[in-house]
Image (cartoon, rainbow, N blue to C red; front, top):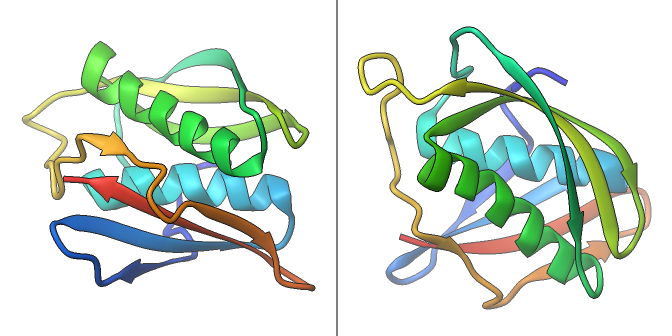
Amino acid sequence: MTITTPNYTLLDHTADLGITIRGANLIDLFESAGNALIHVMLGDNPRGKTRSMKISVSGDDLADLMVRWLGEILYFFEGDDLVVTSINIDSLTSSQLEATLETVPYDPEIHEILNEIKAVTYHQIEVTNKGDIWEARVIFDL
């Protein structure tokens, strides 16, 4: 899945940035959450020559898994200077996620940081099934 404008809404939250993400199913929700994080940080379609990598993330439940998943994407950016350009979740359970990511090296000449996110928080984290859609609320520390 190439980064596209994800289905999310910004939430008004003092000193932090909150988003609500929607997906047709759990895989769509987690892919959309990853895309939303990149979109909030860097805007549309980060570009460059890509490198593929497989990752595995574990969590105690869906909410914990969401925080750890987004934290992993944030770590690629903050710790490894890599920008995720494409997300494909290969498998997902309530406690385990396997994904293939396409990344490019961060280049300040190409990539403009719109919001500097320090961390994905557990504050008000929520992953819920709303009948015909899945929804998550995530708060980022700026």
